[in-house]
Image (tube, rainbow, N blue to C red; front, side, top):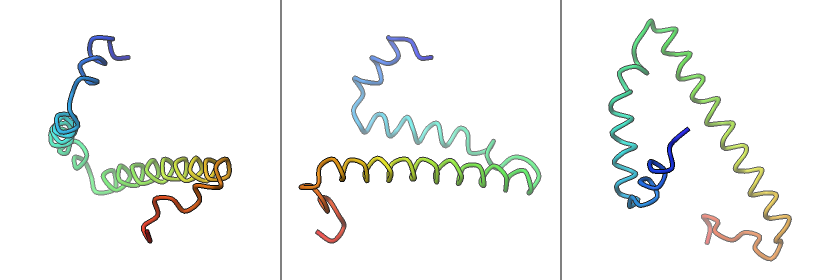
Length: 81
């Protein structure tokens, strides 16, 4: 759990600062993602894909639920617009 001070620091950051922090963390941890036997690395990427699929499904479910609650906004923000 992050301290209140740390959370407040993150809240005060600009989007650019938060993105830079994300890139820094990715760069620092990339070597661990690629470390190990080929099978182990493949399992790491498989797990990441499963987690991403799960998050995407949750997002799509929420969007669908919101669309049903607010039918007047149907189609709002689609790529076709």
